[in-house]
Image (cartoon, rainbow, N blue to C red):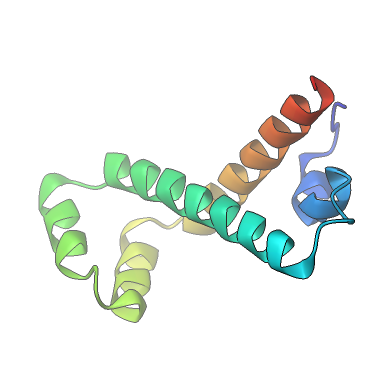
Length: 102
């Protein structure tokens, strides 16, 4: 499946796209949690690549304070929202391609 409009892919429910509606709610939640964690890791890697070394060090100190970290990232990475959306779309596309290959 090729998505011509990546924005539409962003808005689609991944569980439905993968045909996993028959999973239990607990299984769906576990799958979504794993996908969310993967997106978070990918976003963090991209952000760390964009930051200056000293900013990356500051961000590391904010690890236990998500609100302050988000404020810091918003200030230092003005396209943060776009990065998150890109990573969500990439993951969805990868999962759809993998599912189609099965």
